[in-house]
Length: 159
Image (cartoon, rainbow, N blue to C red; front, side, top):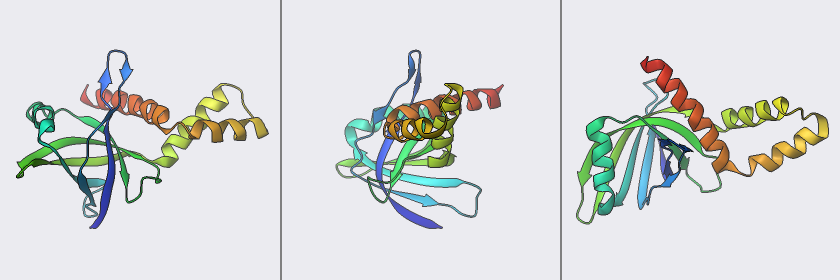
């Protein structure tokens, strides 16, 4: 197993108007790669008590979520995971929320998504490269695009 510091956590819920983005007010956190299981991760996020209701509902309904996580350093590329709330542990003035998660998309998947769209739009050569670098800067937009695809895959798997 490998353990990393969790530095950023976003929920990317599917809503009627598309994919939303909710920054989880992370106070501290860890993410553990459980190498004995294929692509399986355990996430622990220490949050303000005010977040308990939100995550308790998600745990009780076993809502499958798309999570955007950044580990180790805020300058790292985010990864997208799908996960469920496993447990909520009350602490003195905070709560610990534990998620079981699997890797759904990494930086290569987001890059591929951008390239696919550029090809569909007819870009090539130097123009494609320039536009790729520009679009890569808007990580939030592309995380939402990838999350929409992930929700479609989850929906297909349920049916």
